[in-house]
Length: 298
Ligand SMILES: Nc1nc2c(ncn2[C@@H]2O[C@H](COP(=O)(O)OP(=O)(O)OP(=O)(O)O)[C@@H](O)[C@H]2O)c(=O)[nH]1
Ligand SMILES: [Zn+2]
Image (cartoon, rainbow, N blue to C red; front, side, top):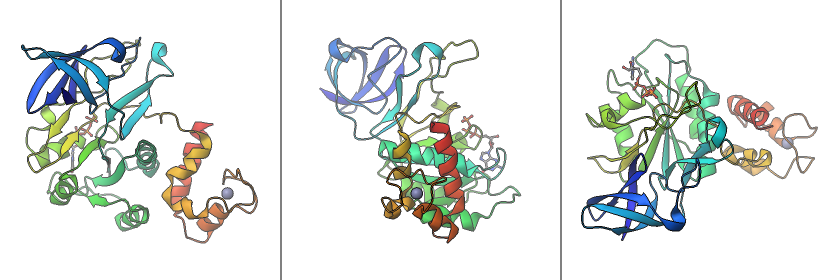
């Protein structure tokens, strides 16, 4: 049979097929390697089902999209953790305050989204609070790169209907710094939704891993969502330095026109990207994020 992995607990993956759930272990060539699981939430898998609702995963289909990061923790360093596979949208949640909005964090998630083949959506939450941000400018920045921006509040309900519409008939992972309101937004969309979610496996101070996991939930209004609480570190998996520029859509039309073919756009003379920034054709906030990410990758 073929089904979709919707959650995992310990060594079992729950596979949904024809409306039934099967508790599956990973078999044979699809087997776990040390500190590394080849099966992720969202994967489409071939499995054999036993009569008692158990089963074995034999094969994982190639992923259409993936949101990955390098694993956290000493002994698993250098391996890929696929947080979720085959979802098509990444809802990046920031808040105007508590915690303070940092556009470079939004941009970091956006790079991870584009790298993995997901369409980003930006939510600026907690707009009911007093703050100092120019929300119209933020909207312009992201809409200039075809990314919808929703100004939301879980207190007065602003933006919730708009969000529900963008989620309908899509599969979306919610990401963002701890405390920006991901779980509250999900509960506001559909009461009870986030109560059942649990955190992504994180290394603790002692190097131990918590064993909780993410889960794919169906929305009554259509679509699927995944929360990602406790995602404290976001390294971007397998991103090469000269690939970073391709994850900034507004750079695209300029690439290849700098004086130096391998221009980093940071200090070289006759750089068309920096020229576009100085002439107001690329938002300086976005260029700053590029610089920060570039230095982080070096
Ligand atoms: N004022 C205000 N507070 C909010 C809003 N949305 C969420 N909060 C509060 O912000 C705090 C954090 O919300 P959570 O939903 O737990 O945040 P989270 O992003 O899921 O956090 P993690 O699970 O740690 O990743 C809670 O105290 C919420 O009540 C909002 O729109 N306005
Ligand atoms: Zn350049």
